Image 1 (cartoon, rainbow, N blue to C red):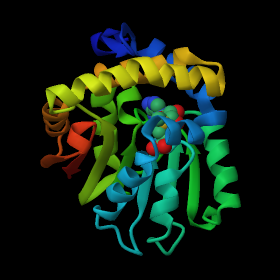
Image 2: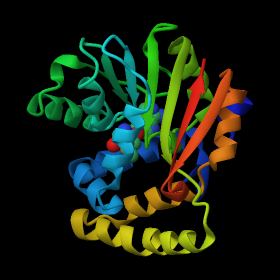
Image 3: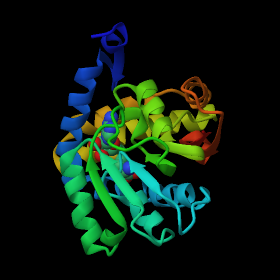
Image 4: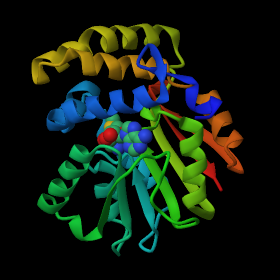
Length: 249
Ligand SMILES: C[S@@+](CC[C@H](N)C(=O)[O-])C[C@H]1O[C@@H](n2cnc3c(N)ncnc32)[C@H](O)[C@@H]1O
């Protein structure tokens, strides 16, 4: 095991080994899987739908694009992208087998299964050949990765030269007053909604804490560049509650 593998990373507000974070994250998504879509709507008051539509529509994919929806969960990004991409060129990959099963079922029920390939695998070890994708999308998955730099290098490997990485993620709120209101909502209201809907406030406490310990906009931009991307920039949405980072290979 190398020194890098021994490095501690944040799992919520705790510092743990990368291996323990991977297991912890996987347990959480197995637990929240059943109510995941409902919880997203409740916690964001529906705003995640706007953010995700904006995320895909500003990416310049076209009917011939080959894309990876990494940490794809139940397939929100795949569903939006499959309306633009005409062939079976949408790949959903997630490390959690239950989330991938939910995505498959949903794709069948909601009519986008024929656009899809599904893989259960981690971002840190992708089962795809070099230079395969035009664009990679990660929506609300990146902060959960156990080894973010390793994942970024692996993602860069599978993107074609000239292609793009797109990350939609919770980020740092810019306005101080708004930030206090947002903190109150996050730490007091979200775990209570989790308790009522899933009898599980701990998983939602993790989700909130993991937002606070994730890199801010500028640090994530630097990390993308440090991992070999030629260009990186970001756009804030809703005063920085979320941001969209783009990296060009
Ligand atoms: C908050 S969900 C986001 C799902 C979906 N992209 C969305 O926007 O609704 C985070 C997902 O990241 C997945 N995940 C976490 N760490 C991962 C990793 N290292 N590699 C692949 N998937 C990962 C989880 O299993 C979970 O499905």
